[in-house]
Amino acid sequence: MFKKSILLAVTALSFGGFVSVAQSPASSAASRTGSLSYHKTSFTAKIGANYKSFKLTNHVPNSNYKNKKTTSWAKSGFKKGTKIHVDMYASQGLQYNWYRISKYSTKKATKHTKVQKYWIYGEALVLPKSITNQLVFSY
Image (cartoon, rainbow, N blue to C red; front, top):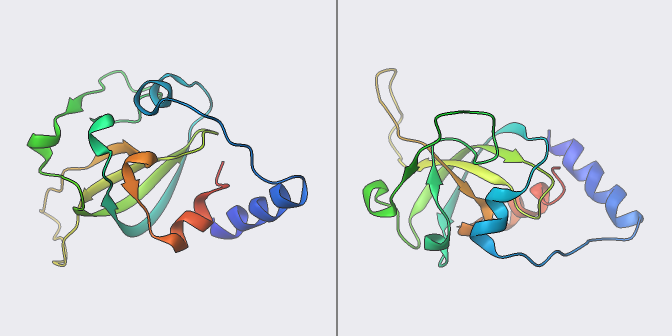
């Protein structure tokens, strides 16, 4: 999976580099259409300073799931700087990906442990540099 991302990054750089698109964070992230591709991953990140500009949802907003729900930031317990675990991301050809997050825990989850997971737009997160470099061209 990451080898493919690196190969895409090298290919993109050899054909002219990056293209930057200015967009308003909350509205344009959820209104874009395109084919979603899901990828398993495992890393920790933090909630960024602008997190309240984005919604926590149970599915990626542009996905085909019919029962999409939004959760409030207060109910989730997340705030700026909260350490989180990312177990999946969805790419759609946008500047940022969608990430499925849950509360970070050092305890190993058991078979009966229920962990609440949410999807959030990548611009709301502070990703580790090693992950950011690998996921830039994941679409």
